[in-house]
Image (cartoon, rainbow, N blue to C red; front, side):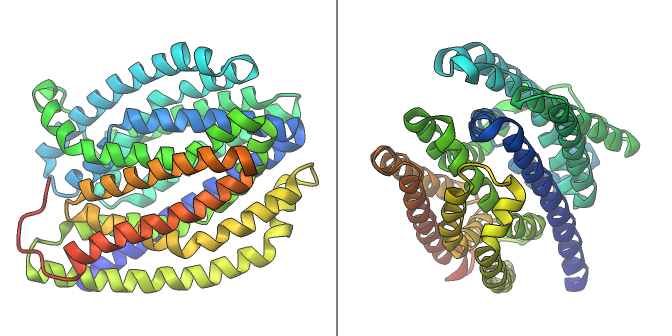
Length: 426
């Protein structure tokens, strides 16, 4: 039993890691070529569009991705069809509303001029991304992450290839965003093909009657997802307001490269999550969770030492390799090196958050994320006007540390210190 579980986790972690590394490398390659074609300001407009669309997507997902992954890992064939119909119906409806609001209200009112069209184009990706998230949850719940990984990286490869071809023929960030939307649509078709080959058809009947209960359970996940997205993106929005596209480009180039280092813990923890969620709320289940936690924490600390040391040393070469010898790359290198100091904080708070999700304590994660995000926004509002992107870097380090303290304390109290003696929260 233990060996089979370890094999499943290892297989899925490897698949997720390979796909995420591939997608992030493709993204960095595209960002570098875009910077060379349209400069740091063009990169800033592109990253701003993805930032705004990412926040809208977090709202449109409504917490249903993680909720569905947990429920699919526990459901039988009939329950799977009913849950899939419910999740896809809700996500489609919410995504359509979000697209109309982003393209018709947010973009023209808050991002006029050259920023409006890129944000409008990015909003068109909301619907295919929402559908993909629901179908990906099914594959993850069944621990077939090699399939979901292959679909995601194939869609990303198609989008990047199209963007690079368009850039080579005089295109700019707007054309790259059109390819971004097309890549997600291609992934939607691929997910549909997998479900058809498995003879899984969503059961659409009666989804309205079940929608309220599902949304109530998904709400804490939704809150945490939205808050986490704001946590990661509010600095770019504030930089854009006070310092414009060039500052966004410098900070965004470093921040996006730093975010790529999160694929290692994210892949391991996403592969672990179905195993964690299956553990019963008993002393034996508690012991198993504690064992998994300790092994995962050790693995993550080893990754911090190896990966953190290498990227800090190779940062100047890596930044120039990705973005070329353009104005601002030296400043971005310094920003990136400082951000790498937060790696141990990031890796360990992600572990604590996944453990809390697995035992039904998503509300604890939501509260911690909300508190830190509010503090993050307030500090950024004070420091960015004075120190530009260096203010954002300072706040990022403080926020990562605060999340580790809050989530680590909750995990210790609820999971690691004493056995679970009550049922898990929904």
